[in-house]
Amino acid sequence: MWKLYAILSAFFAALTAICAKVGVRDIDSNLATAIRTTVILVLTWGIVLFGTHLSEVKEVSRNTWLFLSLSGVSTGLSWLFYFKAIQLGSVSRVAPIDKLSVVITILLAFLFLHEQPNLKVVLGAILIASGSILMILE
Image (cartoon, rainbow, N blue to C red; front, side):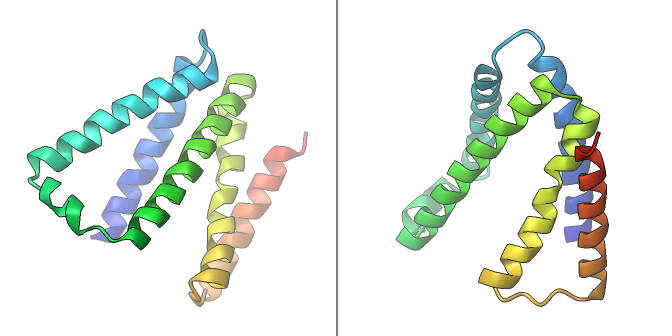
């Protein structure tokens, strides 16, 4: 099932890039990010409320709060830089460069989570990095 969710995530990430490029055309990229974040906030809390998971908030540990907060800060910074990049550049070049995050994630997972990448993962990371580097070069 995780593969289906990953494919859906990729599809909506692609749709996000296209909609965001049009959305930042006439406004500041930081304002665009704030609007997008507000929509996400309403959507996700709506899912939690209607899914009856709100009572679980009190069970969240301090460690979980810390790392989810750090993740939120990282996400926010990523979005701010991404929106500025697509506002200034071509989304068809920015999006592949942004996917260097996949390679960085693999490296960080190896270093901090002690995940062991197999040959497919390493080769995939090399191909992603190569494609991203090609997009950087003019």
